[in-house]
Picture 1: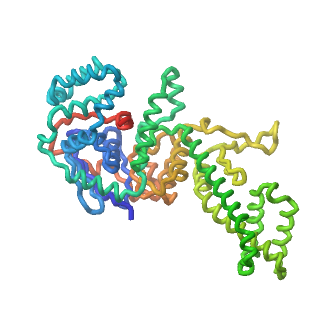
Picture 2: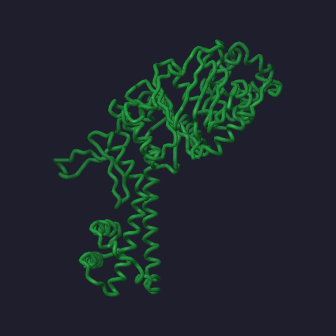
Picture 3: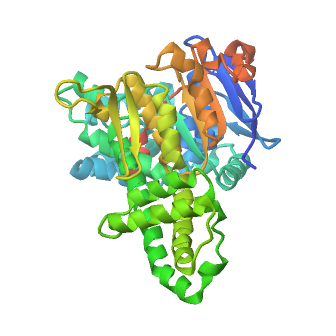
Length: 493
């Protein structure tokens, strides 16, 4: 049974709001305007479920409580900050790697003062230091984590048994991969088009490191849905299908002689070969076998045999031996169909969103491509132009990337969190997007925040709520300093 998240409460979000959200069936769609805390709420849930404490500490709130499987876990932000600092012993090594020969001088200057000096007054002294001595690309969070350890964190009046217990529970019970689509997700190609002189290699390399490390920990942020990863996913999936199919054929040819010698063909049930659809199945299987292995005259003999079986004529011993071979082929076909089901499901779902083009899966050559639905009239009637994935629209790329990850990756199930699922997709797509995610049968949780009521004009309507239902003015009207943790630093540690 998957982890059941039933309630999330936040005290003094931004020092202004208290939020109390009840969740049913691990599913909720929250609708609200900008500035109401939707993105912060879903980010907080994501950081907590994936035990990313330094990033959770970067959100402005007093405390929060998550109810998992009817047990409450309460986290004070002060405790999270200290706990996350204890989890970042490699911050000095990170600074040294980033700054090289300059690191000794930089660390020496930081060591001249204690944590209170650097972090007092909204981190103004540390911000000045960053502006004066650090590269603009160097994450402020790395400096904050370093100077936070200049002193004895154990002197702070905090304890964190709930954090440790919660972390243990989600790591043991959260068997689904947590998949987060934040609102800042973008397309790699579009970034290059807008900033042609910007070298994205370093940033993408850092992101890829972070993403790969996150996969190992059971979560991933789909922040860039460029088609490079999708192409690699296709390649890996299709290669695996091809390899499995050839392995099954090799196993059949390797054991067939043994089975004939042992007479096992006598006990085989060939009645299934008389079914009307079997002829199509056999033809599909024979078409996958190369001519060098099975010449056309041998194929013809099998076709004749199949016709005789379907006519009800009694079989001689030689025919039973061949029929046994055909029944084994049908079995391989059935197992292959099961393995190909995710690809066919991916094609069916994505084609509901594409216009003037469609995904085509060729089970003979194990190829997956996008083709125009309009034939090439002049040069090759009956032929269809192949469209590169990079030529898809932003919305199409988002659809393709998400469902490629959900259906074709190696993860069995997912807990999906999406900030603004309506990004770059048509209104008619919005109405079925979340439904299609749930319909994959792999979604064990779905949390979405949106501006668009169209997102839940479907079977998710009973899970839809206005964020105003959950908000009230906080009794702790205080300003809490907020600083975001960076994926880059986490990836390098």
